[in-house]
Length: 396
Image 1 (cartoon, rainbow, N blue to C red):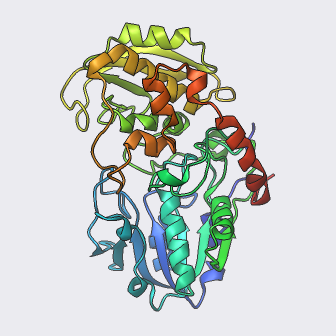
Image 2 (image 1 turned 90 degrees about the horizontal axis):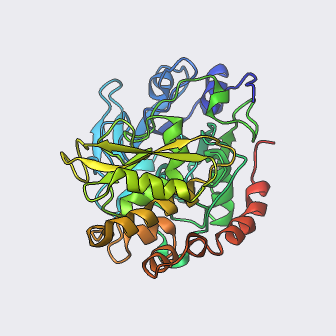
Image 3 (image 1 turned 135 degrees about the vertical axis):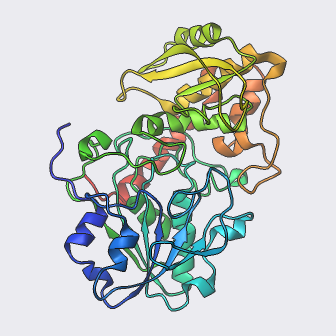
């Protein structure tokens, strides 16, 4: 779809001279994606804005300037090298470290969230936003979201809702795997349905429709995390992130994470052949090999497949990802394993189940179930979510 003029929430705020924040002491929840149309960072823009006091910065997973790798804790308190403003970490060693402390919010008038989401419920920034919004409500601090487009679009959803016993930092609330919302829309939905009671202000993206994806923004994509380099990565992520719950490499430590996968015990021709035989919509699998530079199988040659999305309109990332790890388990035999260590602050539920939001997929896979059985009931859960999605929509 041809792009019309599109201004992200930050651009709207910059054009107004940050009028909504004049006379306020402000905290920012930001990362490297927090830039305007000229790629100027919000921290630097607000620090220089007349009439606004930038009082605190809050760093999510990977940090304010993107300095930390995945699942790496960040120091509780530091100082931003460019501005000298104190930086508080919202990603540490415990679940409690994910929420701003009351003393960090004391004296603030406004807390602003401006981070690029990627459209999948696993992505932790949306929960950083939610927990901060809840804390802001309790501290009587107004909460602002400068909205951004969903890079994989707003027209499609896929997957089940997270079951109560499977809540974690990769699935804290009952959302579909591919949620089809922007961060601003999610903020509106969660503020009401979870009873946060925040004084919420969302600055919408001007010119955005539900038919748009990243190509329509006319902008370069700033990686929101070290292993999310392109919008193509974001498109496969709702399925391929499941690899974090297995001993199959999801391509971390390569230049194309999540788009390729493999392990030393797999044969690429067999993997690609089995997956192509399934006739999954909008995708073709190419045999490939790679050697990760870090994470799983570091320094070992892995064989598997590369995912080529041929039609983003019909591609089903979750169905594809479940099929990938079904085939990897069947071909890997005893060498295939589920991740057994603690994952995202939970140590008593398998990581694969936390990502799926249910034990159904793993249990039925181990029982030899067919692909449709693994995903049984997911569509009805997704359809039940649709009225909520429409209620809090900001874009037509």
